[in-house]
Length: 179
Image (cartoon, rainbow, N blue to C red; front, side, top):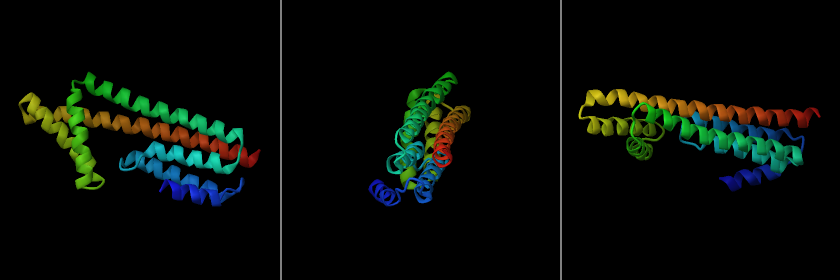
């Protein structure tokens, strides 16, 4: 798939070409959808869209400065997503083992039930692990809610990083087309 995108971008590489911008915008939008529906590598697709724009657009150092800035947002968003959400879950008493097993069940669930399986498997994993650890299914539910809040926080952080990538890229597009 990546090779097909690069081949298409090579054919559309006119510096002012709206087709290249449209292709990159499509990659970025698909990436943002991937942030919310975690079946696609959301931020990575956003960054790929900016890379294709910088590489094939022939904008010189401006394109690479924009790409570098977006790469910083990508790394920052990814690091903060994991550190903050995990710290919050641990602060609220959720063991790392529970999160790991729930993540594994989420991946298995994604293979069994596309899209929704990730969510269902994760929730079931947290609930089962906490019911086993706490000895009660009723006491497991509050821990499951804590895990869901941590996942929601991670999605919001990743979405914020995606929007920063979009904003930075749009500044680059505007500078190239106006300047």
